[in-house]
Length: 149
Image (tube, rainbow, N blue to C red; front, side, top):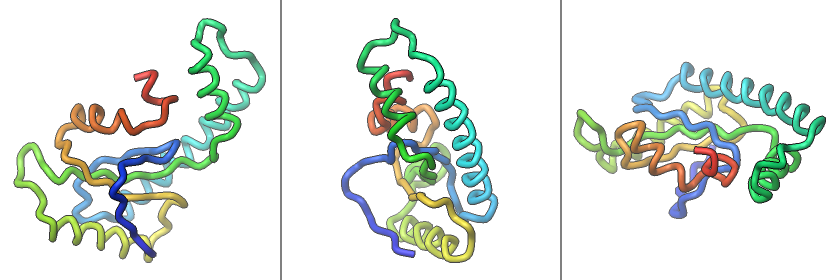
């Protein structure tokens, strides 16, 4: 497995974000991610069938209608699993660079042993609380998600 750092902040088009300390990441985390992806694929399939069988409400702005149509007709059917860790913590000291590297290495090792989702990544933030995470990550989500939040 190869892990590459990204200096640009970007998220996949259909991310499932799993926050946690992942110390260590384990089969339970992977199983949860795979179960969520399987569920989302089933929901997306049902939504797509509904969308394709009936027109969108005309009360929705054209921009949102276009985004929804694109999302359900052109979008890759498998969501991405993003394991998010905060380097700052509400009740513990911040993670050191060495600890961040160690936890990334644990994910790489786990990926060699377990059935990881097809598309996955590790994301580090400085958002210790869930409300902080929403505020930070919202601006990086595709328009389909951020316009409805």
